[in-house]
Amino acid sequence: MSAKKRASVQPLSGLDAAFVYLEAAGTPMHVGGLMLLDRPKVGRAGFTAHLRAHLAQRLPKAKALRRILQPAPFAMDHPHWVDATDFDLDQHLSTHHLPKPGSEAQLLAVVARLHAKPLDRSRPLWELHVIEGLADGSVAVFALLHHALLDGQGAVALARVLLDIAPGVPIPAHTAHPRPVPSVPRKASAYARVSSALLGLPQSLRDAWSAAPQMIESLRDSVMLAPRTPFNVQVGPARRVAIGSVPFADVRRIAKHFAVSTNDVVMALCGAALRDYLLRRKALPRTSLVAAMPISLRANGDSEANNQVSMAQCALRTEIADPVERLQAIAQSTRRIKQQVGLLRGLIPTDFPGLAAPLWASGLSRVWASGHLAEKLPALANLVISNVPGSPVPLYLAGARMRASFPISIVTHGLALNITVQSYAGQLDIGIVSDRDAVRNPAIVLHGIEHAVQVLLGKIDP
Image 1: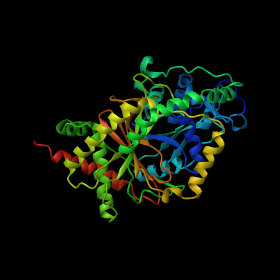
Image 2 (image 1 turned 30 degrees about the horizontal axis):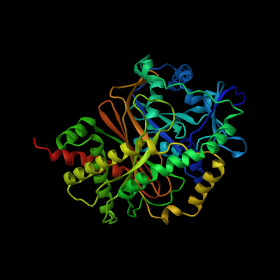
Image 3 (image 1 turned 60 degrees about the vertical axis):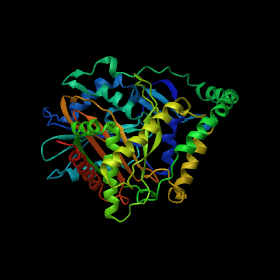
Image 4 (image 1 turned 135 degrees about the vertical axis):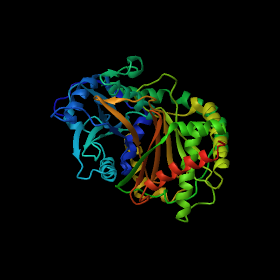
């Protein structure tokens, strides 16, 4: 990217910047999406060239994909997004060919290898990998996007810019574009933010002091310590990936019959699969596994391309053998979580002052990794489970119908397993990512989820 025309500078929020600082611990902080497309109808140039032309047309509408990460002067503030109006699209688009027979195992090996590599910070933090050679003639597109850019719901909003509801028919503009974000003058941004933080410190302390009793009481009643499991380990550089789908109608039927939410059912399915997985390995703790569950802090209608998310603890009640009793216990827990989030939504921080944060925050991440602290300190969760709403209708990428869209998320030290679920066109697409050594075959967990659906359906009266 030799010639850059920088139009504006936008400071990262503290939460966005945290995903940059966490990479100092040696764990890439990008999310991925594996899209399986029906056999594309393209000419001799191939699908990659067709996709390149599509991206060149749509990228002006996807501002988040045209941003370069730039450090603040003297590390006095969080990094900044700099809009680049001239960049090389070919640096973000590549093609991979599977050898015969083009199996799913070969596809997932390529995805795991690509997902383990950090993104190049000298360029906009995203990549698209076209993977050809699948046995059935379909094409896979693996998209990588740094989490500093946006959260799960923001990713869906951004996907609307690139995807169509029919070949050549974009999603309506009123749902496709994020709200414009005012640019910040480049010279004043870092110093102005530091000055603002210092000047506002007295009021911030007063606000925190007044809110402290409510927050302390809520934390005292809700914070759990998770038992030790094979997932609470230091992660290495390699990953394993598993993908699969279950009918959304089955999940909705279970939720309706037992008067719980579909998210409750998702958590119960994961809990059942993990219980069986650990039982077979004689590693199931006597107390419940705890999932870190991302919760959105977005207001309705907000599709701004940034992070507005926090984490809640959800007990998976893996100590309960009966699947229906476990589902109902999880539903009781999530109702309490919703109440707590409703009370504290305005108090949950999504930003923090950036004064020297690139130094101290990255330093803390390096200490966390080098000291293997995730294996020494009490665990607050055993894994991450995320449930992201997607499109209820089929979508198209560069004219090719997308038959599935599997979310591929992040593992970090102490959380070596991640299960992310996304609804799409009548199904729930499941992506499981693990550290290579912590979970050697994540497909076992996936099959456990599929089996758990059938078990709960069997509990419903005909």
